Image 1 (cartoon, rainbow, N blue to C red):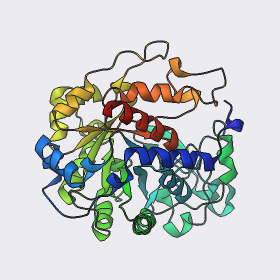
Image 2: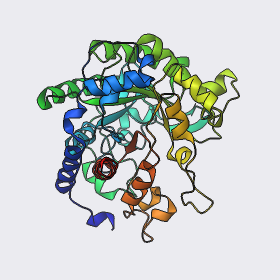
Image 3: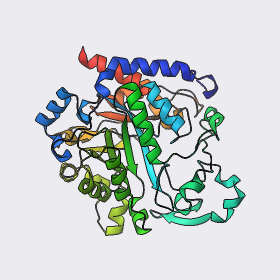
Image 4: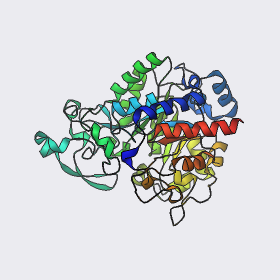
Length: 398
């Protein structure tokens, strides 16, 4: 199927809502009541009690569908339009990535480089802000959030990040501003009141070591906002995530909200490890010993899907690793990333046809990943993931 012949958003919304209904929408709510420290939630008795009481992250449906940057398969990512569509489709959790402004506000962008996701290049008043930087060892040239005040960023409009793949999404270029995280928290409160249940968020600190070196530490700013909006407790409807373990450790000292360590390719090293001279790689962190260390300050991991099922030399899926079993043995939940419908993002054995922008056998790929026992999955395509999760839940209950 080519992108031009995809199902309409209205139809997708209906399908997503149907998936949510199968999974049990009543289970999505969570209280903000304080309880035992989040680090204690990994034990089996506490997990069962939380699930039975309908509180905390253990009350979420399994598999949990996390809207990756919102419904980014259908709207420009990290916009209120993308978040709203994902929620309307029935996503269990909505993701935000946070970067700071020059004046210390947190805004929702996947990267601090906003060259490809906004119309900043069309603003002559900001031409002189274009610059070259090294972010986590990567050389970049463009415009960066830390060189703008929030008021200046609000004069920009967002646009589709990968227009060559998602041509339909360009229809919405210029429609939305960059949202601040506080705006998202207010939006979540409003939607929660309207729906009668909490709206769950999955919040990532981006490049925390880099920003701390600039005097723009993310964790303290994030913790203040979480406390202001009552999302700082062990059972609050929010996950905090980062690719830098030290950021999660810092957050663990500031708030009790559940925390997730993100894990990239096995051969990679978290940037805070590089800066600190820690020789460990992700491969070391996914060993039983590494997972036990993570479990001492976090409640989950967010591994790349390749750490769950590696691909062979042809790009096809191989045999699952022991990561799911080993993480569960430490009481950790797993939220791997990222499912997308397009052929270019699917394993080779689930691609259909030669058009990289066309949809492949997304349901087949999801069925394979969910069968490993993962607790949830990040997806650009909320509706597809919800239907696959509903199929999987139905099979396991029968």
